[in-house]
Amino acid sequence: MLGNLISFLGWIFLPDLCTGWFQRFLYSLTYRGGRAKPQSGTPKFNNHRRWIYLCAVLIYLFYTLYQAHYDIQQDGDFYRDLGIAYDVDERAINTRFRRLSGLAMLAIQAQNQSRTASNENRTLLHHPDKYSDKTAKLAAEAFFIKLHTAKETLLTPAKRFAYDRFGPEITEWQDVVTIKEYLRLGLTFRVPWYVGSAISVVLLDFFGMLGGGRFWRYLSLACLAMVELRLLTRPTLPFLSRLPSSVTDHLPSPLDRLTSQYLIPPAYLPFQILEFTRQALISLSLGFSRLQNTWETPMPGEPGYGEGITQQQKMDHSVQKLEQLAGANKQAALRAAALEIMPFQNDPEAMEELRGKIQDYLVTNVVRSDKEVQDAVLKVRQRRKAEKDGVADG
Image (cartoon, rainbow, N blue to C red; front, side):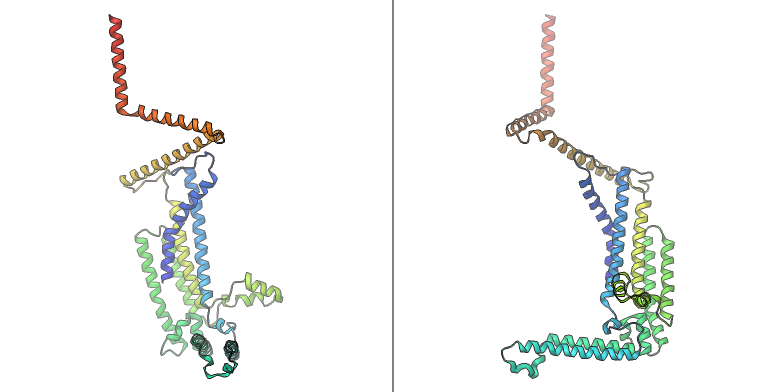
């Protein structure tokens, strides 16, 4: 649940933040030497922003899908804990459990022997307190409990059927024996998720946070419910649970290892398929809604922009645009000035003379632009003109 909330918040904030940051970074690299950058509201700026936003959304979409796959692989399952395939029989499960138990015991004994043998007093090798390391003891106990739980679950046909479809949570269900009872209880636990998802979609649509594509969202949710019902009630494992062995059974050994490790995705149990499908549906729905909003909503400077926007918002946008233009003009002026003084940079005397003249020019401009100075100069000119006219009349 927390992961879904973090993913949802990421879809709200990350694409816009990454798009704005990367567009500024890209312009700082590509527009140099006095070249004017595309300003906000121009067709070129809007086109660049849309394509950068598309890349940001697709990258985050692939990241969320990979993260869902990675989390499933990290969580593992009872079959991987025992190191067996999904279609093994009871005899293979018992054999593997006994072998893992023996290997674990030998590993613990070897660890304790190497620890005690390194001490100066070798007589402690067979001391009763050789398992005094509480951390190793707790880890061994947890490991054996996990293996034993996996073995007991997979050796019981009803529990194995339920585990393949509902995951490790079935080990906590009480007073459940038959497959029908497991199915009934599991479906009861699945209903709240779909009810909560439908309510969430309705509320997000009501507040306009998902944009268009409302019909497809509800259709996708209904299709997911039907797919889950089919996976939960079918008597055998789906094709995705047998994918690696189905592809690599007829390949040579080196090619088998290569394809199973790098090219063929690992097999999924039904509950893992459903978990990944839910995460993928949420990510795809949010991703395509963000793309649709950006691609269909008019940007500043395009026809239709401003509809439904208040006068204050339009004024704020105009002020922001003026600030951007002023900043761009300032940067352009600084670059032009840097280019003009570049020939004098290696001549200190010329630079000092140029600095003095620029300072005099700036001071003179400031003095001349002062209102009081302009009024005084105007009065002096008028008085001199009057004096000249008086002399001419005399």
